[in-house]
Amino acid sequence: MKEILTELIEHRSLSKETAKQVLVDIASAKYNASQTASFMTVYMMRSITIDELEGFRDAMLELCIPVKIDAPVMDVCGTGGDSKNTFNISTLSSFVVAASGQPVAKHGNYGVSSVSGSSNVLEYFGYKFTNDIDELKRSIDRANICFMHAPMFHPAMKNVAPIRKELGVKTFFNMLGPMVNPTFPTRQLVGVFSLELARQYGYLYQQTKKDFVILHSLDGYDEISLTSPFKYFYNGGEVLAEPADLNFNLLNHIDLRGGETVEESAKIFMKILEGNGTAQQNSAVIANAGMAIYCGHQQGGLPSALSTAREALESGRALASFKKLLNH
Image (cartoon, rainbow, N blue to C red):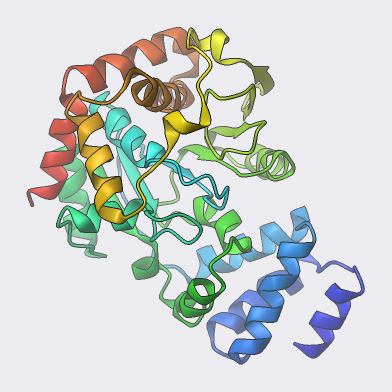
């Protein structure tokens, strides 16, 4: 590790193969906590390269517990790490997407740089995490969505979890989260915290057979915040858009604030699902869910996808999907 840290500190980058091997070695506890923390810290101070990102991704996928689901599942998630402490937009969007007919295999974790990640909010409502593949398939049959708590599917990363928690800031693991869904989904909506990372994701996803949409709001959100113009990268290229292009009003940052505790976040979450969210909160969820539905059915057009998302939320079908997931 000393040699690798020296390389990185001297502003050299790792090859794809070296990056992959380092992560495999971290997973097998070859390095102590200080060395691992130092390695993670480097990437807070300098950009990750495509080769490094690809190497880390390949290691994580090789080490994960794979989940084979026959349905054409989609993941809807963000990298997190934008330090905006929004309410759980991508988790809510996942239930809207599932209610619209697109099966969802949601990959999530506890919040690192926010109060409440998707795992925090689902656990609050009594959802029991599982890596029983038959149970996950039953969830898809029952609710059209299953939830995979990332640490249960990436056991090799157990050495890293306490270090991430102690650091309390985004690391390159935030960048990897959406790329290492153990169902290997064929469709994916990913929100990322920087434009540079959005471009890197776009490049890597273009090399796969996935249908994808990668989102970044230009004021720093890892989703469509509707507080600024946003960029999305998809199979057909890249687009710079304004909230007005989706027929939404410009929102204020305060409209998207999450709770200060997991309990407060859960209350906001439930309010929106039950149809009592503010117009602004609903708009943010519909914008992101609509983009996910568009990702799976690009030929149907974006206006149609947004309309489907609105109907799935406002009809209460997204709430029904959420309740079915919990009642197993």
